[in-house]
Image: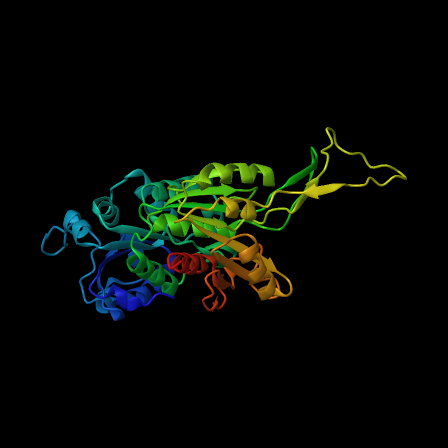
Length: 404
C-alpha cells in the first residue's frame, strides 16, 4: 500500500452518486482528510437519498455541493473553478447512469459539469448490479472514459444490493485511496519509455477444434499493462487468447494465438522497447503436425501425438538485448522455486524475474491476487511480498523494474 501522507495538501473533488455504496464514501472522505488532503464533496440529487450532505460536510470540513445554485442565497457554484482547483477527482460510487453521462457529455448536474471542467486526474469507481456491469453499453461507456484518460478502479465481486452475487461492489475505500495516492507517488515516471508486455496463454493447434494450452487468464499481464500506461509509458501488449479483460485504451494490443505468433510479434517490437516484461504462459511444446480436419475418434486405435519444442521467447530476446534495455521474466513454479527461478535469470539473460508458486493459495492462474518474490541478475537480495491484488503487484513490479 502507498503511504497516504503523499496526499497532504492535495485538492480532491469527491463525486458521490445515487447508489447503495454511497455509505462507503464517508470513510473515503475520512481517509483523505486524515491524510491531509482538502476534500470538496459534490453529490448528485439522488445521492442524498443514500447519505446526507450533513455527514459528508462534517467529515470534509466543507459545505457539500449538490446543485448549481444555493437554494437560500442563489449563490452560483462555479464548476469551472472546481475543475481548476482539483488535483484529482474521484467519483465513488459511480452508477451506470453517471458513467453514461460522463462518457457522453450529458452535463445535467453539478457533478458531470465539474467533471467536464476538471484538468486533474479523474478516477472512477463503478458500483452497480452485475447485469448492469456486464451490459455492452456500460462496457462501452467505461472504455470511453478510459480513452479520455480516466482511471477505472475496478469493482469487486460479492453480494450486491439485489442479493445476487457477482461483480459490481464498489472497491473498498482503502483501495480507492491507495490508487489515488499511488498516482501522486508515481506520477509519470515511465513517460517517454516504451514497455513491451506479453500476457495470457498460447494455444497450439492439434486440429481445427483442439489445442494444447494452459490455465493462464492473462490477468497479471493486463494489470501490468494498465499500470504502465497510467504511469505514462507507451505500452504494447502482445496477448494470447484471453477473455474480456479491462485494458487502458492507451495500450496498443496485438492479439496472437500460438507461441510462434507471439515470438514474431514480440520480436517486431523488442528493438525499440526500453522495458520488456514477459508474463505470458507460453506453451513449451506444440504438435509436430496439425491435422487439416478434425481427428475422429476411432473404436480401437488411439492416435499418438508427437510434440516438438516451441521457441523460447525469453531466451531469444535475451540474446538480442542491447545496452539500456531491461528484460523481465516470470517463473511460475511448483517445486524448487528459488533454484529454478535463479537458473532462468542467467540462462535467459534476464535482469529480473517474478517468481510465484502454485503452492501459495491465491497466487497463480485465474486469481485476482498474487504473491511474488522478485529476484535480480545483479545479485541484490530478493524482495518477497505478501498476497496482494494483481493491480498492486503490477506497481510493485514496475517500481523495482525502474531500479534496474
